[in-house]
Image (cartoon, rainbow, N blue to C red; front, side):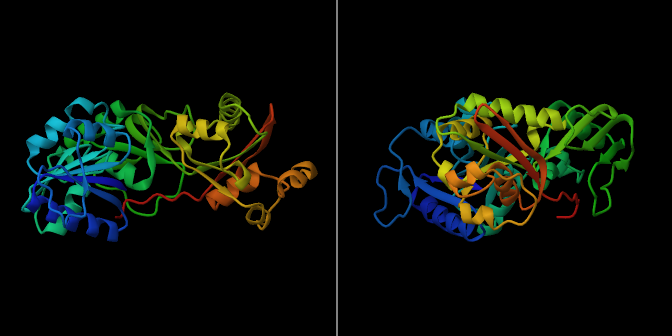
Length: 347
């Protein structure tokens, strides 16, 4: 998780440095900042010389979580202009400068603030303050669980309906197109239909329940090849066509891969930026080392050193199997691979 922490006093700075260090050790990426007039010269936190709200606005678009070491009021006023949508807002946690309380302020479930607050409390020896109803009552939280499983939520309104039903003590149907490796939590019952239910699927338009919460595994890697200078719109069209023909949702795509020569390809980079997808590349030797049945092209091999870019890049990037074979149009090639999907309710 990419995090930014900000402190406002000498005591807060010392605690902030400790929190950052421990979070980094646990696998997070965390950068610390200090907004203070008389900044301690020994502080390792980066200085902030702009209004706190402006800093928060910049961070909202750069990180997945914000940690304020100071009063809740500072955090609330700083983030207020930028709060937009629970599906996109970052996690926000406030911890007092003594480390006694770690409070999840924003995006407790989807953003991961509840878990982050617990983790910060574990570092400081404090108490995590969680206010979401499902957590308080020990009820299965579908949005937190979906995030932990790498499942995209198809409808926030359906997710709310599922949570409301579970909080009311009602049962909710559950159906998965993929193996489920553990028992269902209390409140979920395996079912093929019913008034309300959860369906885990890659399919775009399947709704087996009267109100269906579709959860889509982010498990598909797109492999893309193209002529130099190809526009993002051409890449978007062919990718959309490939997914539509396969009958699967855009939500299932987790990343895009190509050959090393395309690392700076403007059209691919713009396409990935529009779709908020990470982009990585592999050398020709890495792609050619893959075993499998790929559609070869002597021209492509002569040009870039690999006989097939899109299929090999998709499989290499996913570590799975080829799911959509090469499609070509307007100088673009697209393929897709999918990794194994297994569902579990165990932490």
